[in-house]
Image 1 (cartoon, rainbow, N blue to C red):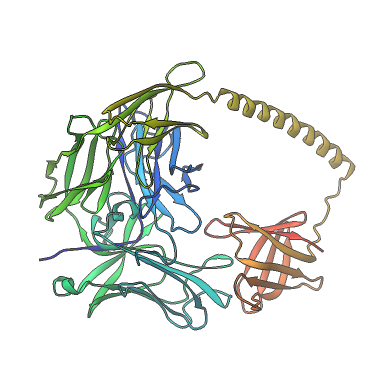
Image 2 (image 1 turned 90 degrees about the vertical axis):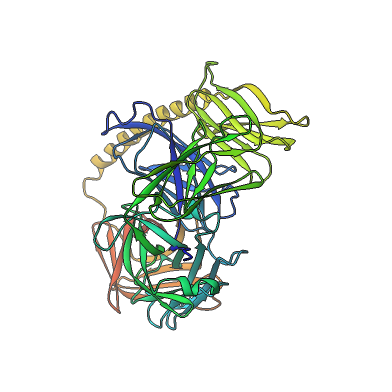
Length: 563
C-alpha cells in the first residue's frame, strides 16, 4: 500500500553537536547555537532575524548566524526565524548541547516558480479562493475575514513531503506533537502548508471557519485513507497539536480551520525508531555540517560527521543526501518500537579546506567558518577551539572562505586548479578587540551622558513641580512599523476636542480607496483609547507628540503629531 503522508506548514530541523559534561547545571547553562538559513531552493538568505531567549542576530549574505556563550534557563529552547516576504519558522532544541548546529529554511510568500505557492488580494466582504498549481486551495467564505479594510493580502503555500526541502521547512523538532488526547506522538506527514492573511495593520484572523483543500495525486487516490488528522504548530510549546479531521472528498482532503499558522495533515504515530550513522568520503574523512534526510526530517552532521534522527516505527523510509551535485538514497525500515539501526553514508572524495582562527592575542579563538563556491552550494561549521575543516568537491577550482566572529568577518579566496584533496590555509587572524574597546568607551560616554541628563531633569523637576497634562487633540500621521514595512500611502488619526476622532488610511495599490474608523476617544494617563462606533476599539501609548501601538504579533506602529 502506498503511503505518502502529511501536510505540514513549516520546518527546520537540527542536530546537536559535541556535548561534554553539559547540562550539569540545568538552571543556568552556557551553549552555542550556530547555523545557516536558506530558502526552499537551498539558497542562503541574508537579513533573517534569528531570535533565541531574547537575543537577536541577523544573518549575513551567506545565511549564517551565531550565538556564542548563551546562558539558558530552560532545557527546551525555541529558535525563531523571521524575514519580510517569507513565512516564519521555528526550530526546537529539546536537549541542548554545548554546541548546537542548525540548518533551516524559509518559504517565500506569494507565487513561486515551482507552483507551490500563491498570493493575491481577497475582498473582505466577499471572501474568495486562493489556489495553487496542483489544485490545493484556501477557501475564505463570505464574511469570514476579520478586517476593517476592503481587501486583505492572502498567502497560501504547500510543500509535498517528498520534496527535498520539506525537512528543513517543517517547524519544531522531529515532527513531535500531541494527539487529541494530549499524548506524545510523531507525525507521519503528507505535505506542508503555510497560510497567512494580512492588511495594512498586520496579521488578520477569521470571524468564522475557512476551508483548506489539499489535492491528492491521481495515482494515490485509491490508496489514501478516508480520513486524516489536521495539526497546527504551536509556536509557544514548539509542538504540533491536533485540530480536527480532514475528510477525503473525491481527489481532495477537505478540512475546516478557525485560525492560521503552520498546518499539517497526516497521521499520528505513538511508536518510534532511531536512526544514526556517519557521513565520510571515500578516504574515510568525516563530512561535517551537512544535511542528511531521514524520513521526513533533516539531521545535520556534527564535527565528526555523525548524525541521528527519529522515525515512526512500522514504516518504510529513506535516508539520503543531496550533496555537492550528486544524490544518495538508501531504503530502510520498517523498525520496531525503540529499535535502532546504523546507516553510514559514503560520498566521493572531497577536498578538505582546513585552518585555524586566531584572535588579537594570536591564540586560537572560537568562530564560524563558511565556504561557498556558487549558490546554492556551501559548507558551514562553528569551531570552539578555532580549528576548522570544510569539504568541497575536488572539481571546484575557486571558492570563497568567510571567517566570522560576531559581526566581524574576513574573506579569503581559495584556488584549487590542481584538484588537491587537502588545502590548509594556515592561521587566519580576526581581531575584534578595537571594536569591543570602542563599544566599551561608547557605553562609558553614554553612562556619563545619562547622569548629566538626570541632573538636568532633576533641576527641571524642581522648577516645575506640577506635571504637564498631555494634549492629544490634533492630527497624527503614520511614521513607521517596527518590521520596516510600509503598506499604506498615508494613515492618519484626527483627534477632535469634542471627544470624537476620525481614522483614515489609503493602502498602497488600492487606487482612491480610503479605509478607516471613527468614534470616541478617552485619555487615561498616557494611554489613549479609541472606541469604534461599530463597537470594539484599540489603545495607543502617547509620549510627547508621538503615539504608538504594539500588535499581538509584536509589530509596533508609530504615529507623529503634525498639527
